[in-house]
Image (cartoon, rainbow, N blue to C red; front, side):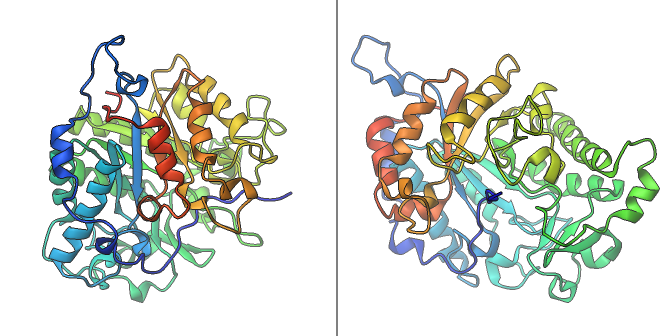
Length: 425
């Protein structure tokens, strides 16, 4: 069966954003048209000026995916590029930027737990001479944007050579914490001390900065690699008593991470939301009658040991933003089938539903033909508007928003984002 792939983090420089986006070019427009400015219906206000919804943009930093465009830029150049992305969000009438601040168990702020991120200077642990996360929060809020801090709990490196990590990196100080798998290095989710540490590392940013949300994506246990096993047998032998299977124990480990983090966020800063953006299929209906009518090669419950549906039903998270990175009509994972499935999952739970959109696929000749139509994404927004629990969309990723190679984002803005709105509270 054809496997449906997760989002692809493309390595390499993104190209200089500053040459595409003029920093500060729309700040005045943001001030003149504050988010949430609404008039009563019947007074000529467009429909989308009344309805609060998320309009988000991911900005990835792993391997300089979006920002900085390359490692080693000056602090001033890095800040200018970051502001360029924020201004682009305002120009597109978006209202939230989801900034990756802990890409590889390293940090985009002066963390006492982990080294400075390699994407900034090219050398993990080297001080970049400024505070990217603090600057991002201030600059985003000054433009009426929310700043969602995007963390990866368990990914350590896109390689397995520990000598390439900073000398102070926890995976070198505690070599028993990390495991190689599929050519990458991951913290072992089965170790209670790891689970506690990664929470401490992430919550440090919550304490320091007025971020609007803690955001995770789809990395829990690693995506399966054919012919390889994740070597957590020793941890299972030590901590797995009482579980029916290793799979059940692994899901319990992930559940504990989510539940404990949710509780600790509210204790540290009650107004901060906790959102997760998982791979878009919980389980196929052929596996579980509660699942979606899909035929995805990955199921988060079975392959990533992430019970995304359960977290919603238990009320552990504030929002879910499934990555529905497929076109309308795709047989294995149809956007038009998955949106209503998620719509019903969140109903009555109080958890907000946002839809993750694959803007990066628009215009890609290697994708199905639907993605070569500039109107495909606009059709997604039209379709989702028919489901009462959908409260917005997020676009992957910043570089694609800026480049907009076939005008798909421009079409979304023209059709649906005629004025700025506030995100859901």
